[in-house]
Image (cartoon, rainbow, N blue to C red; front, side, top):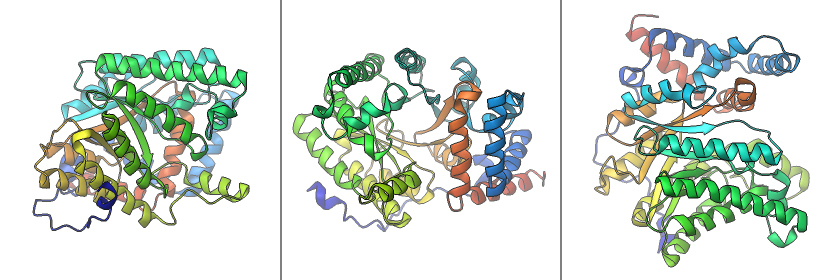
Length: 406
């Protein structure tokens, strides 16, 4: 039955009004003139691949040798894409987003830690984001990456079979399980849904396995633990169908965050070097198609599921919002959210929120130096994703002209 759902025609004759993503007055109502001009200048720079390359090199090396550029970073790219250096710093961003009907997903974006002490500190920080979200409608979710609390090689060695681990690795693996469980238990007790982010394919089987076990434990009444599916992988639609069958058979709820993906170049390069078939879709159209089919499948099974559609794609947002209405689901049904990154695609976030749907922004935070890998990826993403920066600039320019500032 479920396997047949992915053939659903995506060009259904929807008879509901489509949300306009061209309304820049709504999209940028939360932005001051100064904010808008800063965003324009930033996206203008990011739109130049050569400048991005030079800027990345300079920033990385300047931070290494201790040049005083932190202030410049904080006033530009950090201010655009991050909420602050700690949870308290993010309070103004959280309040501001909530004022316009947009929730916050606090994302502790510190990377590259390797010691057990660092992992335990990260667990405490993630639990702090859960505590901040408890009984707080402005913060509907928490999120974490397993690699933020685990040694990468342990996840990789366990990817196929746990039996592959030696005694020391097995001990480390059980420590990872304890850390993940501590976070999921805190989320369950606080009634705050938590996303477990997707990562590279060579560790994703381990993450999937751990996440499914947490769902079995904590998702009996509702979806507390969410897995993340990267739909630029050609196997994820079949995986989703299989997981739905499991949750129905075992009687628990399945939370899923859909994204297109973040590791495409790395995945293809590794597959080429190591001589195995690439897990990545042959083209963007295939990724888009599977993403939209997944939306249909999840909504058809919403009685046992919860969805966060993490996408900057306008078509996918239209499909989901129209499908919600077609199925007579309330716009603000708590089982269904749309999400975008802070500082990007405000024309999607704010127009959807204005129409009464549930929307949240990922709000990364952490010390400036330690979130630089995240910020540099944002710069790369806006440079490499076809049309992303151009679309942002077009809409910002339109609003500047409407305000008679350009």
